[in-house]
Structures are given as structure tokens and as C-alpha cells.
Amino acid sequence: MLLELRDLQVSYGDIHALEGVSLSVAEGELVSVIGANGAGKSSLLNCLMGIVPARGGSVTFQGKDVTSLPVHERARCGIRIVPERARVFPRLSVYENLLTGCYGIRNSVGLAGKLEWLYSLFPVLEERKSQLASTLSGGEQQMLAISRALIADPKLLLVDEVSMGLMPMLVDKVFEVLSMLNRDHGLTILLVEQNALASLGISSRSYVLETGRIVLEGPSGELLENPRVREAYLGL
Amino acid sequence: MQLFFEQLLNGVAMGAIYSLITLGLALVYGVMRILHVAHAAVYTAGAYVGLYVFTMTGSLLLAVPAAMAACALLGTAIERLIYTPLLKYPPFVPLIGSIAVFLALEEIFRLVGGPYILSFPAEFPFPGITVRGVVISPAIISIYAVSAAVLLLLWFVVTKTELGLAMRATSQDREIAGAMGINSSFTISMTFVLGSAVAAVAGILVGIYFNQVYPTMGAVPAYKCLALIVVGGLGSLPGAVLASLLLGVGETLLIGYANIPLPRDSLAFIAMIAVLLWRPQGLLGNR
Image (cartoon, rainbow over all chains, first blue to last red; front, top):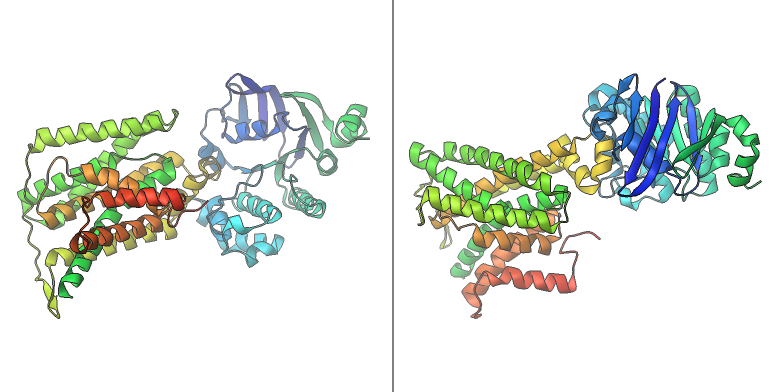
């Protein structure tokens, strides 16, 4: 397994966001975690990244316990995140935002080639490369956040609610790109989403998170047929 | 007219020195959101170390780097020992810590350097120049040259280097900067190194310009430069430089020409109040 969480717990003061989550992601998989607002999806990814400390449990990445590693060292291990609401650096240019993505490893990732690839994936970023990131639209900021994560050649890509606030057409395009990255480039992706239909559609396995606990898991195709999922998350 | 130009030159020189101190504050505020009052004590320490090394060796070329190194060390020590442990508390706690460090350092300067004004008898190895009757002293020339070089260097570091990128990213979103592989605590320490070394240069320039080094020489700059980062726009580096230059010129000209019954040091605070009333984001601030 590339990534294994065991009994992961996160709390903010007295509020428990995650109450013992266990899940795993194998190399080359695209796994999704679906859940409603406040189920703990973002806490899960932020804790995995090391932005939020775990109160209990463990995170193992490539067979190594990274639970106590600070965030920047986890990034160096090859875990990258597309944060909720993109969180691009507003007062850096688009190009500088991309540079932060490969901070300290600019030479080993082959910056010029990476930029060319990302600009061909999202041509709008090349058009706006010298603009401040705060002047981009919501969708463009998401594309920038995805590119900022991809430029580092991650071993594991964490994607947090990338569909939030995007036009349906753009959601399709972003999901298509994620699916392509997984299929054609073998990129391992862990996706958390409120948009259950789209994420079940592109992932091979899924977990359902409710109030800080995993309540269901299985192949995405089976979850699509599950009556509980259909009623609660697909509105069918 | 000659007098006016001489006053103007003096004013810009004062402004340049203010900007060297204020930039350190703006950098620190940017990455840590702390009002670094003790920065003015680092500046005083720079003047003392510079003076001691100069007295021992007779060389400014040794005194300046020695003071910069000592201040870089002092600045990071304040960051590591005082600010970082206090960051988890509300912002007024590190502020009180900063004021305490500032006062403690002033007392240490008094104990070590003595409670009197020391002179800084540095001679510059070049003459002053006179342009159409306007006398430009070697001290003024040095202040201009050194501040321009330091400002240029800082601009280069902040906008063109990976460290500068890390500093700007950390100041805009520390968590996400970390998620990009940027070691934010190292970046913050380097920010203190940079700001404190620049403050040392300012301390030495002031010591030579006024030929005075004394324990409380940082007292007025401590609060004046806080006012300046507010006027410039909190965390904005161009704003800090602009506000400093305007204040230097404003102070010198107002005191020289307008017969206002206020001490010169009040101008910074009047400007701060005015800015807070009419442009709370500061001259060049965002949001």
C-alpha cells in the first residue's frame, strides 16, 4: 500500500472532526471519499498532509510512519495537495505560484518541461502567467492549484473539493483531467468530494464518510448501486 | 534655495535610514504577524557592536559586517526564544514580550556601554562635494550609497530568489506554503537574519551621522517605525520605503520651514492617525 491510515483522529478543541478513520490507497489507484458538508473530509486531507495535527492514530506513506513529520517534510516525501477553495497565493503571479509548487526541487523536476506540459493542459495559465493569482476566476484558481501540485511530480495527489463553486462544464473538465492523470500517467489520487456522482464515476474505490467515521466502503460501481448511497448522496 | 536643497538632502537621508529600520519590521510582520518593537534594540545593538569593533580595529569595513552578524544572531535569538513560543497566544502576548525584550536590551546596553553618549568618530576616506553652493557631506553620500545598495539587495532577495519566494508565500498562507515543501520556521528565521542585519547597518549609519551612540537611541525609532509600517500598509515593503522617505523629508522640511509648535517626532504619529482615519489599509497596502 502506498498510503495507510489507521484509526486517525482529529479534533479542534472539544470538537471531534475525525473519530478513528482507517483507509488505504494503493499505488496507481484513484480513490474517492464522499460525504456531506462537515463530515470531516477536509480534516482528513489536512491531517494527512500534516497541516492539522492528528490526535491519535497513524499515517503510513510508502511503508514509513509519517505521523509526526511536519508538513513541509511530507511534501518532500511526494505528497501534494490541491486545497479546498484552491488557496493559491493571491499576491504572487501565476508563474510564481507554480514555482512555489517545486520549491527546493526546481532542478530535479525539470521545470521547463513541466511548465510546457501544464500550459498545454491548461492554456489559460500560460496566457495569465504574469498576472496576480488573485485576479483569476474561481475555476482558473483551481487549475492553478492543480498545476501547482502537479509540478512537483507527486507520488500521491490529495484533491479537496475541487468541484466546489465551479460551473458544471468546468467540473467535467477538471474531473476529466484527474481521470486522465490517473489513467495515462499512473498518478495516485485521493479525492474528497461532495459531488458524489462525479467522484464515484471516475474512481475505482470509494469510502463514505459521515460525522467523522467511515460508514461504507467498496468499489465505486457497487456504491453507485447501494440504496443508502443513492438516497443520501445521489438524490435518487 | 541652497538651504532648501541641503534640507531636502538631509530629509531624504533620514528617510532612507528610517526605511532600513522599517523594512525589517515590515518583513517580520509579513511572515509572523508580530509587531517587532524589539527591532529597535537590535538596531541599537548594531550601533554598539559597530562602534566597538571600529574602536578596536579602526576599520568600518570590519565593523559593519561584524555588527550585521551580531544583529542577525540577536534577531534570530529573539525570534526563537521569545516569539515562536508565544505565537500560540493572542497577538498582544508576543507584543508585550517584544516590549519586554526591548526594555531589557536597553538596560543591558546601559550596563555594558555606560549611561552616556559615546561618540562614533568615523572618518570617510573621501571628501564631500559642493554642487552650485549646496554642500553634500561625506556622511550624506555614504548614507545614500549604502541605503541604495541595501534596498536594491533586499529587493533582489525578496523578488528574485527562492528564499524571497518562500518569504512571500509564507506571509500569504503559511500552511499552504508548508504543503508546498517550504520550511516556514527556517524561512521565518532567515527573515529575522535579513531584517536584523539591515537594522545593524542603519544603527551604524545613524551613529556616524549624529556622532552619537547611546542606550536609548532606539526608543524613538521603536515606535516611529511601527507608525511607519502602518502608514505604508502593514507588511507592504514598497509602502514601508515610501512612508519612510515621506516622513524623513516631511520632518526635516516642516521643522526647517513651518514654525509648528510640535516636536519633530510627533509627525509620524499624526501621519499614522490620519492614515488610520482615511486610508486604513495604508498608502500601498492591500485589502
